[in-house]
Length: 521
Ligand SMILES: Cc1cc2nc3c(=O)[nH]c(=O)nc-3n(C[C@H](O)[C@H](O)[C@H](O)COP(=O)(O)OP(=O)(O)OC[C@H]3O[C@@H](n4cnc5c(N)ncnc54)[C@H](O)[C@@H]3O)c2cc1C
Image (cartoon, rainbow, N blue to C red; front, side):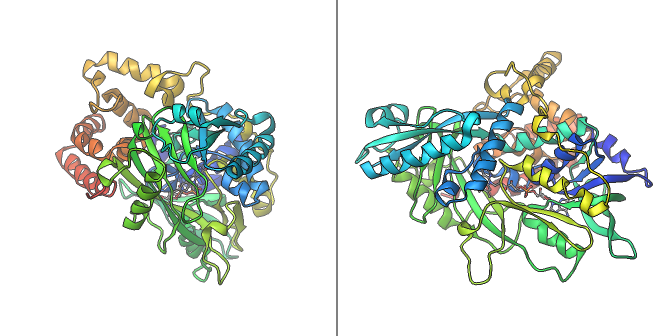
């Protein structure tokens, strides 16, 4: 992916793109992927980095949602299970089949959860990742040595998908880019263009790095801006009512040995009636999440103290070694772009997590809600609106079968897995220049060649892009990311031809961001 080459494509002022997409999170990228699968011309604009918003802050589960099943949202669960199966086939380098264990404390728990999970297995049909089953107290303790044994009756094992959200976003961007789409990060949509009939004809963007402005013409414009969707809807129509209710979820990252083993813990009913996960991920344990209404959309939302306390307290109830604030390596918060509840109700967990496509009078197509797991289907449903908006025929979607960038059957081991078929090229860089073979941080397996690769091939522009989303150090261990920030910034500057002033500015920006991921003790 080459940013300069893609920006050059915007210099042709007469070009009319079939679809222009605002937003480079899972929703916008799903639209881009589906549109290129139909042979359409696509331009995607992301004001920050790909997945900088909610799409890098998920629980990292590819799931039908056991909780949604309990709530009776059968259609959503069925759809998500199908998408889970497809994605695991199309991106084996970015996904995992993860075993989860629900600890059970009574016979009734056993009956209730066993039955629910059998239905879940049945719904996944031939895309099932493995059958659920009851395991004894001894086996539960053996598989999860850190679990509190007091009053434990046994456990139920079931299987779901897990993934690296920001890396998957990047792989989708790269797949679409290689299929001819013009994919750009750090390009903000500042206004929309309309004809004399009030119909959308294009948009205006500003490169957030050079500050250059570009007009772009498109037959259909998609608003895929997650919690920011109302800003674009109001750009289109200043009278447009609010449709989005941001709901914050946080995760704490602990050392993996708090739970031990390889299985994830699923707590089906917390004090606030939600579920809590503790999932092994990149050698750490990701614990969350919460559901807290927030008023304003933000790219860097901050965890509230009460959310941090809630997660620590709930996890402590299930672990023998009780985590404290000192044990937290990082905290990250994300905002769910939930559909705003009807008047009189404020309970976001009662709102369906299904996605919705909204067509405005001007022809603006907004995709809202949904989940990471269903990004492809959300894209397909959005592109289906093309005929309605333009009156032109739209070819059938083929995105179900697209193998994602880096796809290989020969999955590299260890942390190289996420690079799939490109891992060898990065390792070759380290052979070319032995300095790049050294590690970025003593506690992490990543090497400096990955920073070079991120700049050369993954459109990384800022220090935060590398430390937060190309390698995931910021959300795995915020202090470690701060410790190696200067080393990484210097190497990026060398690659990008930047000066000391750039390095100082990047370090200052990163310090500000990273502080939000540290817990004050
Ligand atoms: C705590 C939490 C846990 C979750 N866990 C899971 C999970 O385990 N599994 C799952 O399937 N789903 C999960 N989800 C849901 C999933 O993460 C979201 O549904 C999904 O990431 C939303 O993606 P999006 O593209 O709609 O929004 P975003 O990722 O926020 O993307 C919107 C993008 O639009 C950009 N943008 C805004 N304005 C402009 C503009 N003017 N010009 C250009 N770009 C603009 C923003 O910068 C942003 O990057 C979770 C959500 C949360 C909050």
